[in-house]
Length: 257
Ligand SMILES: [Zn+2]
Ligand SMILES: [Zn+2]
Ligand SMILES: [Zn+2]
Image 1: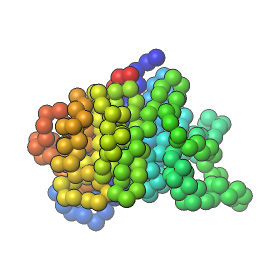
Image 2: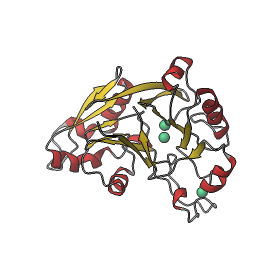
Image 3: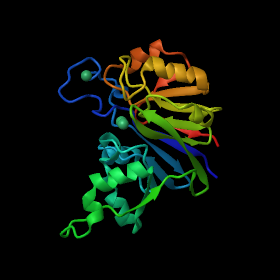
């Protein structure tokens, strides 16, 4: 099997960076790495493409990544910044002449049924709706020879799924990782994880909290994502240990199985 490539489609927090109406230094920065669409990643191998989350920026993200085909969507959770781009999968329905499977926890799928009632009601007066099949995640996922392992975590009072593919982990929107999930994130080459900002937040991990988790799990490299406008790319990187960097939109990593 060819190598699996992981692309950061978006590294920004729920409002994106720049944030509308904000004139702070990061929102006004000319550094392209300070322009962050909403958090999502693409996994590509042998012509297969799976995205984790469909953000409100999904269309722009797919255009920028040159996405030609979409085999599945895996959802971390159902917050608006992770699901609202779902309608924009329709061109892939047309080109592939098929429905697209969506994977998520039972809770996430319930929220998607609720938020996208028009998809599931039928009879939409001539306009097209996404063609989807819902699949509950109850264990490891298999796609064309690649195994994806769900990693449950806390997201404030709610829950979220991280995912592990080979020796790469992706954990966005977490506030804490239960002990039972930590072994699932051991022995990683790359861990991509939420680090919203320095100021504490009930739903998200801070830079200091994520550095502590990196110290505990010991991946070879760590990449922070779901980043707010509080953190400028260059200056924050300068303050981080050598093996920990801020992710940025368009960053690609090779996934080792
Ligand atoms: Zn989010
Ligand atoms: Zn700002
Ligand atoms: Zn969230």
